Image (tube, rainbow over all chains, first blue to last red; front, side, top):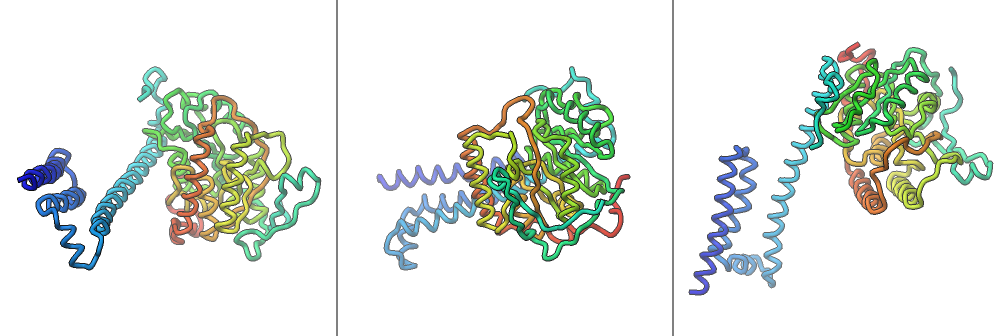
Length: 126
Length: 288
């Protein structure tokens, strides 16, 4: 009974993660390939919640004596997700910087630089 | 103006103090660089990145215009929240970035502008007034004298009155030694932002430029990519107003971060040859 209750809690957390991913996909209109990163993070969690001995079973199958080492493999999966996310953020950051630079140069070329705005209308401290 | 040898004689603070001629060291990437005269019709752009430098940038620009009337000047207002942009004389070009990109993003904007307008040489001068306008011409001369792709203005090649804190000096020496260890190039003032680069460098930086602490990284990356980087003595002074953004704790973090960044740079290839080689004649995208 105790095990079942724990399973329910873990499945609930896993489902919440998935729901959060789906909600973000809808509300923030995330790109599918970015939302997939969330899904791939949530699905293993859900699987492990439902089948808690999965790690031990997997360790036995591939001949790992210590189950914690098998857990490391799962952690590596999460790290790969993080690397993927950081790559996305980094690329987007560079694109935004490039856009800002081109906007600045174009504004200078067309005499629309901030210098032509009176000092009283300058941008305020964020 | 015909200038002498391309072999760079670097003078260390020790040799300068002792009045000893420095040993001649081979230029980093040139097998046999040829002495080149400074062409009379080169187009030079002075790039001044400025973030909240309203107290110094106007004075700096006026001095530069007086001393170097033939050079164009571009101020990059890196999302300043004071009235930096209004201190720049109307005749000088200003690119106002919509938000703060940091020194790397601001400098790359200047290089993009230089590449777009077909400039031959770009010179970086900090907006805080540390770099003397009277030294700008020396950088350009050295660029041609050494047949180099980039010249770094150094505070430490000759004994000067410029004084740094011990922490800062140590940090610069550590980074300089680290660069030497990684790629074999000795640049004593690797954090100096007083630099001049030719068209190849302009095109390379317009394509890609390190973002956070670009000065030391650029030296290593250029050297690794086969560019010739040399150092020349330049007098500097303390910043006119304001305080430096790098304190003690920040300085230690800076050295650690840049150290790791430099090591990572050893596997980077940021500048493909086709993006860097200047086209024959004037670039087609030239705006002038």
